[in-house]
Length: 256
Ligand SMILES: Nc1ncnc2c1ncn2[C@@H]1O[C@H](COP(=O)(O)OP(=O)(O)O)[C@@H](O)[C@H]1O
Ligand SMILES: [Mg+2]
Image 1 (spheres, helix red, strand yellow):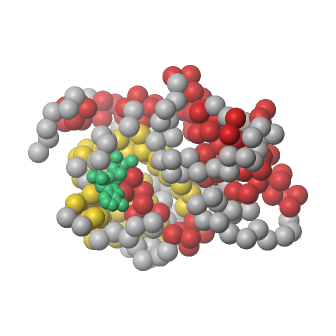
Image 2 (cartoon, rainbow, N blue to C red):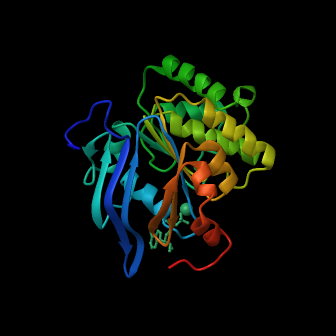
């Protein structure tokens, strides 16, 4: 298991003994995780389990206080967030970050050009048509082809979550991290989202955080369950569904 191999065999994501403290609070501890390329992995767990912290550590927004993070076989533990994007990492945030006054097409266009509301940067001139074409393709991929001219402030909540997915796809990620993509969606909107995720090419590895067990079980090949900062179970959706510890957590029992 040499970490110098960065070829096709390397897992898209590997965490080795990763922990993250915030002062006295251990938000994540001793997390080992391996997601092979092409897999759809759900991270399931109650609020406060450490799921978003895991994404922040993988994306480089917060360095881990212990352990190592590997992307496609390369140790990126000390690589800054922007460089991880260039190595193929794309993510969404739990709260939507969009230019509300601009249209769907314009938001996607800016994302394709690498302009994000979170990281304001100066727009360089040139290559406009190619980026416009890519933005139009993305609108179709996320099922928003009919509303490309609509200002984002007028979209329904489900459409916003679809657009958020498009924004994350704009950098052509090889590993896509989605933080609660189904949060606040109606049952119908959830089904559309599950379909969109199923249609993404397998050249993109997808890790999604999901609070809703039904969505996690429908969208994922494998499920990792977190509780109190630790990984407490991992398996296929069927195995997780049959796991008594997981059921206990979701029924609110204390698990040591
Ligand atoms: N930036 C931060 N500063 C301090 N505490 C944090 C920070 N981010 C997360 N935490 C804490 O870490 C724990 C795990 O949070 P989080 O990863 O957001 O959980 P989840 O996404 O599973 O709901 C929580 O107790 C949360 O309050
Ligand atoms: Mg969270």
